[in-house]
Image 1 (cartoon, rainbow, N blue to C red):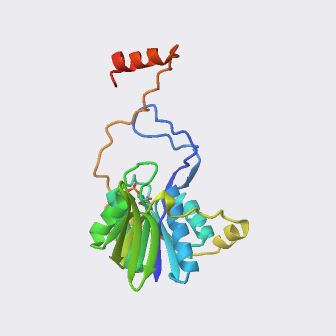
Image 2 (tube, rainbow, N blue to C red):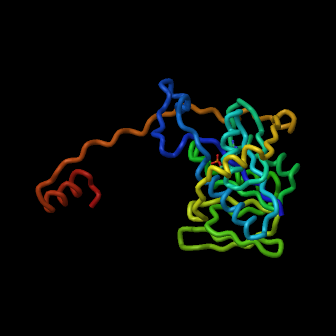
Image 3 (cartoon, protein in one colour):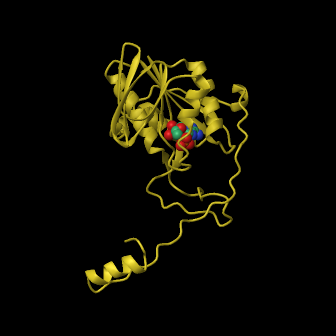
Length: 249
Ligand code: AMP
């Protein structure tokens, strides 16, 4: 079985994100970029499935600017076999990405597509669901455990009340949650090997996808600053403030 994994290049999770002065978005110039953490988990899961003899080939795909090649090389160093960049300098919204991934899925015919549950830059949590709808494939989102057997995926999901286990027929879409696995560190020999793996470049036009944004960002603002706290002399004063000032009791 072939597995297709999508990887997005995002601002590194350790970076303190700054909003652009004109409020049109966040600053990405001269900022450390990395693979979306949920996508790292997706690549790791695919590699584990290959190591377990369930998968035979792992193809990673990223949509965006030329610099996404770096993210794809990281995925190849984790253990993916081949990479595809759908190259564009346009701003890509989840629907456009889902349409591009649909075309790549139709071309590659994987038995399973694994995506992150959300990208930590737009926090949209939409692409996997949209892709499942466009392909009319079953989906299991927020996976914390995946088991593949006899043409089916058994997927455990963390829900409010506990753990839910779904059985879905392959081919299917799975999106990863944080507890699915802990991605391995990329080793230097694997980084070197990754440089020799195939990286194909496609263009949205050639795939027949119009990636024009459908949504307009009205404005982006920084979260409001927290006010400084105060010290209260004793528990009685605290209860009084909670009751009469904060009115939470
Ligand atoms: P989102 O719906 O934007 O929160 O993203 C959910 C998941 O979709 C991400 O974790 C990625 O696996 C995938 N994805 C979103 N945007 C891209 C992109 N530009 N290139 C590749 N994968 C993407």
